Length: 268
Image 1 (cartoon, rainbow, N blue to C red):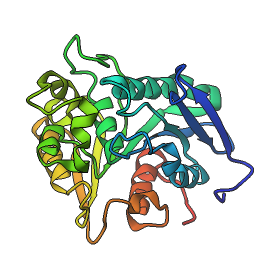
Image 2 (spheres, rainbow, N blue to C red; image 1 turned 90 degrees about the vertical axis):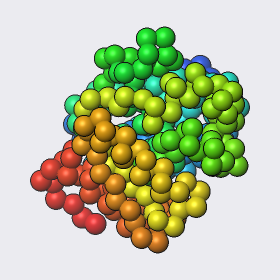
Image 3 (cartoon, helix red, strand yellow; image 1 turned 45 degrees about the horizontal axis):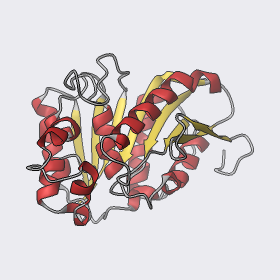
Image 4 (cartoon, rainbow, N blue to C red; image 1 turned 180 degrees about the vertical axis):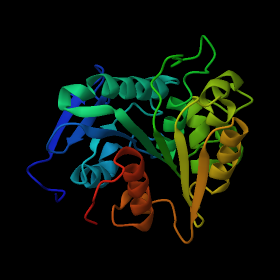
């Protein structure tokens, strides 16, 4: 089914009252499509929105996946607004998937860049401290978590001045200024949820988010005994994942097919 097929429906739904508290469904024809959540990146800056994931969402829907692409408030809203929005958006999609004929029992979450950070945080909600924003000891887990060039190590990223200080702006200060925020926001400081295969993808020519972010997070995941792997793509920078025709997008697509639709036949 081509990306512009009339058999693919697009539906916008709001999970809250703020204009940025919404997501868009990309729904293939038929019932029981497996469920994929997309979390866009952009260093948490308000200029970047979910439309940067539109090509990916269309491509996945064309291949039989039901996609929930989420929007959220960014660092122009005070911490922890962004995290709470992502948690609410994820939960909304899981609760309402069946209303759209989506099989949410087969599910994956994918995040790019800052969206990778948010997806990593959203899959670490079980073990957050009792009073931490977004904690949910019974949060739904995922079969597959794919993080592309994630800003997964916030304290280290702050000290490296990633994104011209975007980490500090996002959390409202440096690690020494607001250590309590880093403690419940930095995926490298959190206990990942105890289920799901985690795949990290990263280009070795990425200067926006260097590959050591993924390498450090991979070690963290393995220290917790989780199934996790890192694929480093030679020559890739930060943005190839946004192009469905790229090799790294094909790799992610294959991972989704193998995990959520094993045995399916696909036209590339």
